[in-house]
Length: 197
Image (tube, rainbow, N blue to C red; front, side, top):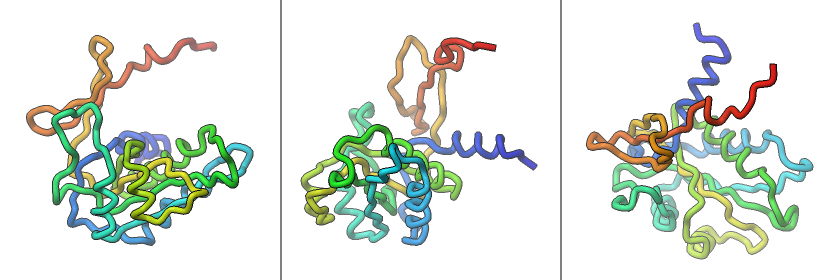
């Protein structure tokens, strides 16, 4: 039986940026609420908790949200998931500017908590910060005091994501002929500046 460290490490490894999903796999609102609950419980700078959320698992509304998104900047020839490969749920992360006007790092902590939670449920997703802000605001009728920070696409992943070593300082992710998604990562030796023992 795996110990807690092995379980956590396996969830970290499963938590990749997935961009192709099984669109027949339905995600229900209670699952999205569970993921938002994880975000609610995460630390917040000065405990102000300025983040708010919209969840969506409605297929028609999902298509409208999807049309506002920009996928995978490094994959220039790819316009995003095809029909049948699209996410079946979204969590839209918002900042309540009445609570805090400038964020430090709340959104990163909360988004990672949601994605780790999704990975623990054998789901996956992609944090998307590139989208048509105006169009999304109109579609979802987002009030002016709320700023859209991230769209978290959630679904049942169908693609394989492989972690590679960086070669010649090339950090761009890419896909091979078998549609395996490769993500270069710096080595531990490169990022660990000093070990003080």
